[in-house]
Amino acid sequence: MRPNSVIFRTDADATTGAGHLTRCMSIASALRQRFDGEIIFLSRSMHPDLKKNIVKRGFRFTQIPDSLKSDVKAIELAASSTAADAIVIDSYNRELYEATAQSRIRDVSEKLIYIAFDSEHHYLADVLHNQNPLAITRNFSTESYTKRLFGLDAVVLRPDVRNAAKDAQVADFLPDKLTLLVTFGSSDPNSLTEHILQSLEFSEIRIHKIMIIVGALFNQSSSIEKLAQASCHDVEVMVNPPDLIKLMTSCDLALTSGGTTNWELGALGRPIVILPIGPRESESAQHLADMGWAQAIYDSNSKTRYELGDALRLTISHGALEGACRLRSAINIDGVERLVDAILE
Image (tube, helix red, strand yellow):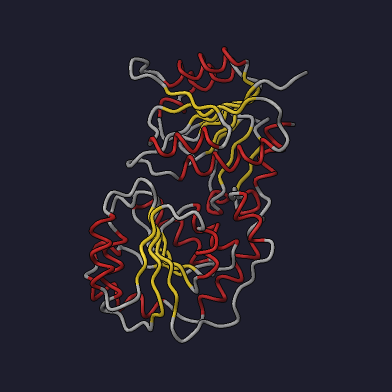
């Protein structure tokens, strides 16, 4: 039988960030290599630039109208009109996790896949995916038929990261003067980029260059530019740079928050210092630190710029390279294919 469609239900805006969309786009890109049907992105809130990127990549975008209050109803309408083979849910919307909602979604597609964020729900999914290695330690309630794809063996990496990671290696030593990459997601709602840049002015770290990467959802570029111009360091601020992978591979060490960026940098063999925001990111960062995969600084927003600068100095060491080696070995750079296998089988 000819394949019909796979629907991704996800959002990307200043509040939720672009992480959900990035992950779904990576899955969709891998899926398209093996699936002849239509790939549809169904969204309630999508930044215009990101919407354009979805369409540019050859996927179909469908906006949920404001008049349609139920996400479940929107999925039902989209699935029935395209005879959906599979539906992938990557959303924080609690409605989508209710038992009745899951039953209704299952009724309009051959397969139901959840990108699971927590274990408080019971899942009726055919496939449950969570690439955070901490998920392996959690007790997720599922049906007997549910296939679980957890941890870094099923990590979802973008195609360009996967290609670059094949030849990536961890450096033998950190240079005397460091090239630092600073990136805190597409929106950085907690203004951590600004705080870090100010703190590095008062740190004793010997710095060659600071590369600031911000995404399309970031709305404080002007203030960061002013700080960069006034800095005693060589600072370059880049918004949505097209050569992000080249920038990642050119840094000696990265300062980042929790999320997919950690796995991308890890796959590229770059040591990371995680500055988590909120309990979910802090728990994940603690797990990575306990595993010896990364170093972490907690409660960074509550620290003064002097305190944070000193914490960075104490954290950035040659031990970071050992963590990078361990993390690189733990990541399956083709992990997304395991998820595609589960969707298509």
